[in-house]
Length: 232
Ligand code: MG
Ligand code: MG
Image 1 (spheres, rainbow, N blue to C red):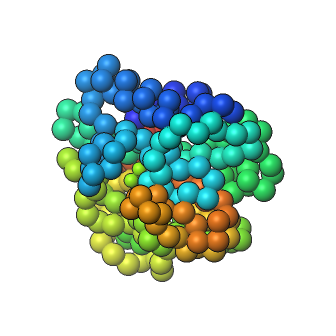
Image 2: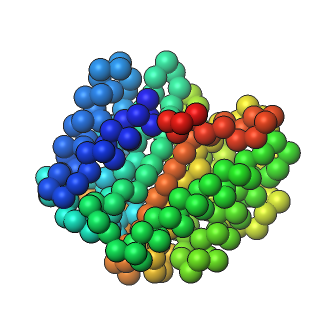
């Protein structure tokens, strides 16, 4: 359901659309499926989706501004259904974007895939963190350190926290049956972030672009299984 709603939003993104429209669309679909948006009311967050354009890293508020050709929009969305949470994020191009921006999106998505590939029984949690960081930095970008991935299941955010940086071989041992959300946030420039006056919106300190991709996955004996992807 999370994957389908994110796909629906992705299909809707184009110049002239507002992020508030996307928010309403996601909420309407939740109601239709009798699912509950995971973020609305969580710690006081007022919307169904987080909509974070351009230099916004995460936790942006949907608003009535028109999206503009060449921008990027990170959409983070989660819901609870039948007692379990799903959580996923994607950074979407608005119309045509330049090559530099496209590359940031590709490397960020690849870094998520690198992290997922290390979600193996018998491995350590920080193997995931290290794989993400290595891929990002190899390509000249920086990882955000203030926000992390997390365990997920009957709660939206469960232990353990999953940073997107650090040496391999540390932290809890990974076991089949664990469900986690891996979510690299990758900056074009400096890694630092600051929070805007609304108390939520995180932006890059240098105003440069940031991208965010996230999947909820299950660790199985046969390796990682992505739970928030349509082609499963
Ligand atoms: Mg999320
Ligand atoms: Mg998450």
